[in-house]
Amino acid sequence: MRKFATLLLLTLALSLIVAACNGDDDAADDGEAANGDSISMEMGEFYFDPDEISGDAGSELTIELENTGDQVHNFTLEEGDARGDGFDAWPESQAQLELDAGESDSITLTLPDEAGEYEFICTIPGHYESGQWGTLTVN
Ligand SMILES: [Cu+2]
Image (cartoon, rainbow, N blue to C red; front, side, top):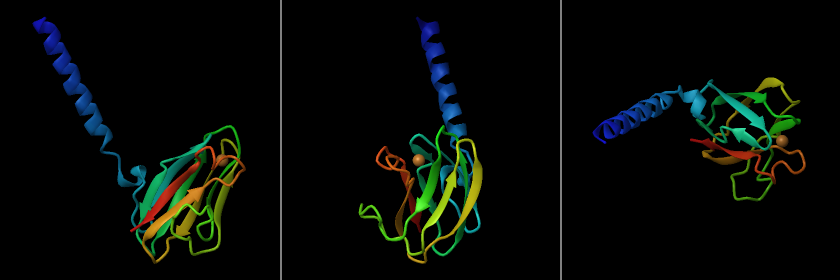
């Protein structure tokens, strides 16, 4: 019984160490970026990963997108609060990158001067409704 308890403790300790190491990813990978940084993002059926990204007001942010799904998807910031979900209105004209299944490319955004929370979506019919959207927080 004692051996079992020791083994259990050891297993717990090991999994904590593994969890701690996973937290050490560089900033860009968890969706936070400073000026000129890039963020890697995957999209598929029907998600963006990460689905929460952030950057500084007025800075440039490059998003390296990979479509790992089986269908065409796009990353879109529509002018205004297109879905009326209470997000702040994207001030520029539409920013969009559409990729076929398996394709990769990047899009560089100039973030608004106003801090706020903006929504990015996939505009292909049914995809937003299936949960393919995320938030861009401008600090
Ligand atoms: Cu889509």
